Image (tube, rainbow, N blue to C red):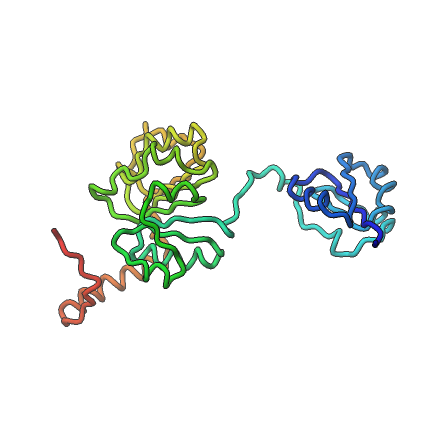
Amino acid sequence: MLDKKKILIIQPIHKEGIKLLENNPNYEFEIVENIDAEEIKTKISECNAISIRTAKLSGELISGSDMYDKTVKSGNFSERNELPKTIELWNKNILIAGFGRIGQCLIKRCKGFEMNVFVYDPYISKDIVESLGGKKIDNLPDSVKEMDVISLHVPLNDSTKNLINYDLLKTMKKNCIIINASRGGIINEAELDKALNENLIFGAGLDVFETEPPDQNNPLLKNDKVFLSPHTAAFTEECMIRMGKETIQNIIDFFDKKLDKSKIIKLL
């Protein structure tokens, strides 16, 4: 059997990283919390690799070890451990509620991050959803239990008003994030605030509100777990150019009898 490799871990790391060494008979490790140079110096010559977080290793210390160059190079800044923990999109479950033009554009971005995309839209066929790399779901209450992100892209009507309410929120994962860039009123704002304060979900991002501008007494304005924007999801320079050109082109196409029928909205 090959000699065990010894890993010197300077400053604690997440327990999931430690588990990789605990379960591997080819390695042994030692965690050094005291980053005093002299203490490290006595241990560094005995190790095959070093893990560092924010500690600085001088040239003198490095010269006393046999490790490879890439093992000791780090781009960490001292402030990074003070920042809030973030969450990756990779391999997360996202539910896109509403699969019109915006929802179908969103799925392309999600697949770029290798997310698992689920789609809720009673009016869109399973074939269309699957052709774009998603999985169609028919039961919203059952599906939200497994989601890390829920992104809303449905119109506001009698069937979608208060679609996201306390009863639904309390079934979600504690790390779930809800994003609403469609219409206010789809989320019951008072019940969302209650769910956030009870740590039922991780957070929310809202671009739209039931009343716009929102009342200054709206508790969500003071909730640190919500990121708010003033109905500006489409306010990029490029988007404004596209909207302006498409609007005028639709008018021209209408009079020229060339208007794409898919762009016609029937008024009830």
